[in-house]
Image 1 (cartoon, rainbow, N blue to C red):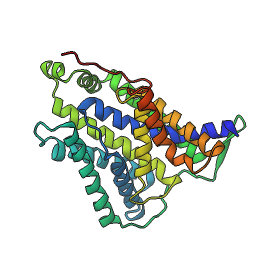
Image 2: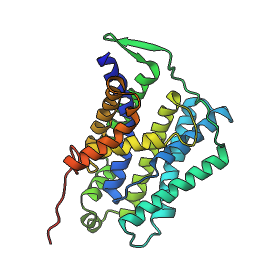
Image 3: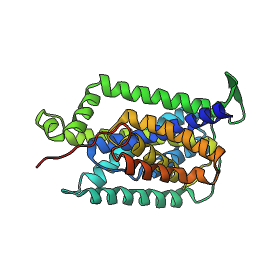
Image 4: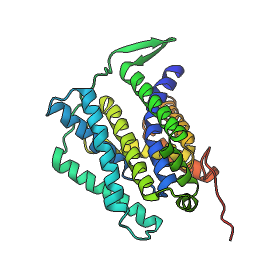
Length: 290
């Protein structure tokens, strides 16, 4: 039973890590904790659902069109809400993202309603494969493969492309990056666009194993934020490892302790990490000297 729990936990943890990458990337580049990630994922999933069900677009073309919409949504958040703010405080930036979160929630309820429905997916939750004696459903296998592949692609983007290197430079030192000619505002827009795309992919992978409704983004966003805190808000590899660890931990707690504690284990992890290691497992704690 233990290997089975670990494998299914890794599949869920890959989704948490994918969303946590968005949290960490946005925080490192623009110093903003984006609490709108859950609703961004939800709205993008509803867009894919509308394309498939109402306009009869095949899944993969609808998937690609949704990613384009997700990019535009993330960039619009930066251009319309964050960029006009003049010298905002950290609390002010958080309030802006919370306000955008509530706007998306209200618009989704107005456009798509509050009913729960299933998400059409080419992956089956009933078909399964046996890998070394461990049974893995087709949807969980594809969740892990797609999430891992996208993570590797993102790391390659940061390592080998000019924009990726510029984003890393901005994350390390915004003032020095500006002096070197890097356009900070453009990098911020790109960061929010990528963060929204990660949320869209995570939402479309989560929807086949849950349901599509306007509350679907709340729990994954909370778990992703926990994964980011666990791994370290300044470490992208830490966000991925934190997501995988959280997925396994909550599965083990649900199986061996109590299913009721599976939801609340994320809060316990946040409290424990902040008490023992505030910077996270792989994060760095910077001290400013005056």
